[in-house]
Length: 296
Image 1 (tube, rainbow, N blue to C red):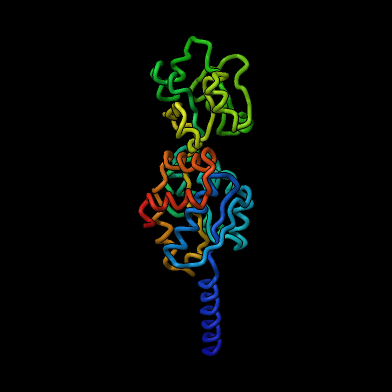
Image 2 (image 1 turned 30 degrees about the vertical axis):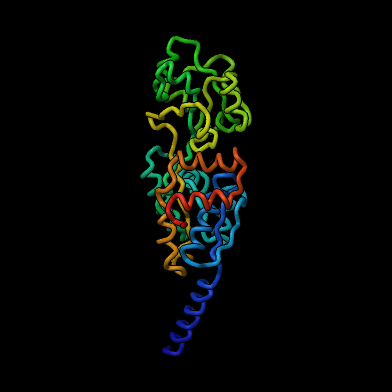
């Protein structure tokens, strides 16, 4: 029995050493925000741990990234609490960010042995946006203000992406929650990339955008407060395989340094640097890490 325990211990030690020697693989889904977050994480981990880091950025959608985590093809990637709750765990939506994070964190640990770290600091949920001039002229700050403004009037001309019309957290619930009146012939559905142009050219008066869209950092627009907390939270956080954290004891501390460092405004600016100014992702990541005090 004693010899068996020794052999088992040697095998466990060898496996642990192999895990430590393996590069840490950072992944991302296939859109700008995910790719820049993945690159920032990869550079930060490489710098802090003096460890080889492999990148599998721009992988694909949620299910593909999640499967890669389960199969060990990824060690970590950024995910959103609302997406994890509905797309992966198939649990009902909630508007309480702390409740959603707690449920996601508990279920991922139990079902997949994946750890959710503290949120990065931004919430990429839906955002209802109007022109800045309209907001200032009519003193509209929130969705409740927008509903009051159209009371007895013709209503808002609304522009939305195709998905927003059908989603359980999309248009039908929004209109019901705020009793928002919309003009006849509204909403106009269009590709997401055309929403801001339609708003700027006054083809529509309000659009359903995303809270971290890059153009929000440079256009004269107003993101209306969701004062009744209709939209569910989509807080971004890093998800990490528990085995990877065990094999690299300093990894969690390095990743925790990024928690809370990304406000909605910071994320918008980062997205715009890539989508609007077409700067290389690696260069944008270095600029961020320097500004955050992680690089000289």
